[in-house]
Image (tube, rainbow, N blue to C red; front, side, top):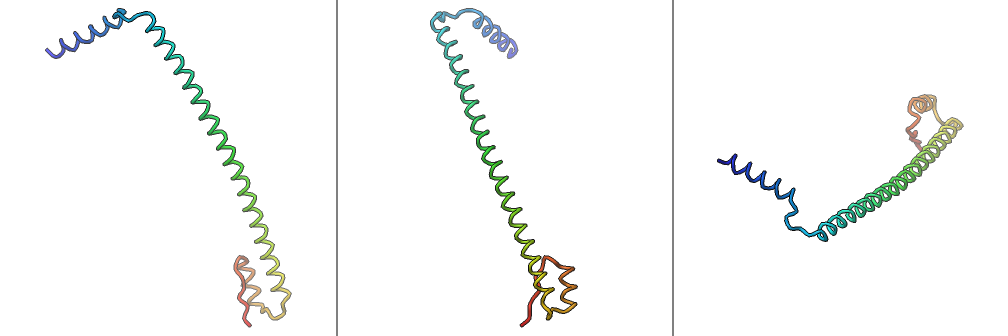
Length: 115
């Protein structure tokens, strides 16, 4: 029984969609124009989002390059400071050989200077 009702509704919908159903030509033309305008608006919306994403990507790439440069400069400054500290320690005659060996093994650590 349910199958008969279902098939009857499907056949009815198909028949109604194939016939004009009393819709005037002007309404069809207006509906088609509306769909075309919506398609154009959708394309404009897509292009807006693509441009926005492109702009954000360029900005983020520039920030990444800048931050990499800042990191590289900071690393250079750190290395230079450590080399200066090593030179200072080796030039200091009060530094013992044990301290110098420790510094060679641990170049990233500062030697504690006892007064």
